[in-house]
Image 1 (cartoon, one colour):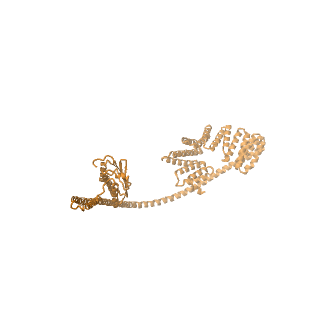
Image 2 (cartoon, one colour):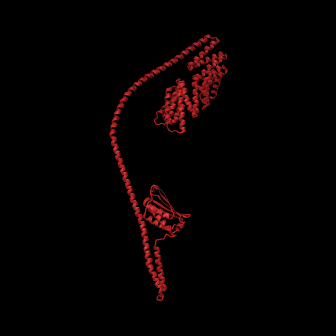
Image 3 (tube, helix red, strand yellow):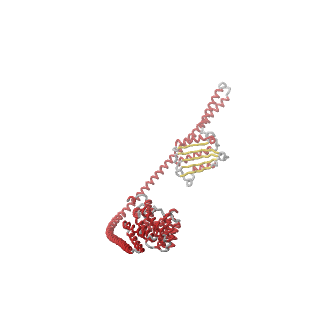
Length: 637
């Protein structure tokens, strides 16, 4: 059983404890006590535990403890209410508040503080009605009915019981209130209404749910009918009460029903049958040692014997009655004495415990003094240790900052070196291309102007001397023509390729291949459609090529990219150039235009072009250029 108290889902354990409050209160308290001592438990579960412990103490008749735990739970709710709660959580807290007020009110009722109980229950009712808490409304109104019944305000009590039925949450609440209303009408001697409500309760209540209560209600109905002089009907309900009691083993209830049945038989004039019934019942009462039933039997026998004039037997029964009455009284006295002895022993033990606690307190004080000395020593040690630790921490932080600074400085230095190297590589590539073109131009010029010119002059001279070289004229002229054409062809081959209609994309692609061979990034060139790009006006090609050169120069110097992609697209009357890299990027808002970017903008402005730059730090750069290539070309280009 110990395992059950300490293990399992806390919420389920609380529900089990609530279900067992009436049938097994000690079991419930053990569960709740263990849960309350748990350190790691959710606030909502701890709140439920406090509320249920309050209900437990009310059930065993200890209202002070019930009030203590209820107010403890109420304080926890107030603290939770100060936080931001959802509507559902707020309503749940209000329900618990209404429950707590009912527990406190029930405690006041047990203590006999009727007016205070009514006052606090009305608080519970106000909250319950505000949030439409139907179950609590029914319970509180039933409690108020009982309290007003205790104050002898019987009509008001009936009113609250009926209102409780209107809000009843199950059949049990309904038939319990029927019993209460029947009891009030019985006290008012309104036996017809008492009979009506008792019978409604008896018929509505399931027999198997609580047969002992069913037997009691049947007995009460019989008593109401007896008082209303409906003796035959009364006997019928007495027998129902006895049958229920016999079937479920409630012998004292069964005997009590027989005693009441005997009185009804006597009232009907069957005195002999009544006496015979009581006499037969007496041994059974003695067998189960129920003094109260025996006393009632002798009292009723004395009354019946007196009525029929048998004074001897009446006197004998009366003597037995007083003996049993004295015995019961003595039993009660012994019980009271035993309780007093228990209280005395308890007080004695409490004094012994108090003495032990005083000794323990002295020991605790000594332990506290020793702890204080130890703490003082530790504090002195810490006073010395803390400044040293602080100095070490400061020194460590200083070293850490210095290391970070050195690393940053080294990183900046590496970046500068990489930038210079890339710039040198780019200059080398451009110089190589430029020198190659210059050398081709020089050789072409020499061949064209010198060799070509001389050969042309020879050709002219030879053409004028027709008579002297008549025979070899055709052969010499053919040879000279061949040499001239060869020199001309070499000259044209050495001259840098013009940005003509058929080779613009090839020219850019060759340039990119040259740059890619001497630099790190992978450069991709995607023209589409190639035929339309190659047919761009000659006036545009040099400017567009120089824009691409400038963009590549900037990207290679600053972007630190691994891949560069250049896309040419012609659609409608526009050329769109998209230049993207996956480099370090920059802030478009904070970085001002450099010389390279300004050159690009100047060239584009001549072509009525537009440039849009999209760059994010550590996310790369995307540049979109739009040039209206087939519109009227400006004169300055």
